Amino acid sequence: MRQKLKWWFVHLAAFVLGQLILLVMGASWPVALLTQEVPDPLSFGSEPAMWISRAWCVVFAIDTAWSLIQARNGSDDSTRTSDTTHQSA
Image (cartoon, one colour):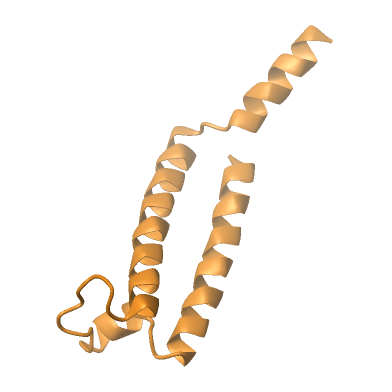
């Protein structure tokens, strides 16, 4: 579980840094959403940096939900692998 959360924190840091860079470029979708300045219409192909920001937000939300579910269930693949390794030794 710790390994999974470690990678989630790495993704969080990359997400925040990336969104800050996009904010400086004027294309951070979360900021545009909060300030109600999302380009209208946000049609595919227009504002590519805004689309990247938006897609990344969706991926981050899915990753966060998945990580929380796994943390709540206490599942961790690295623990299972090390347990079987110790048992066979």
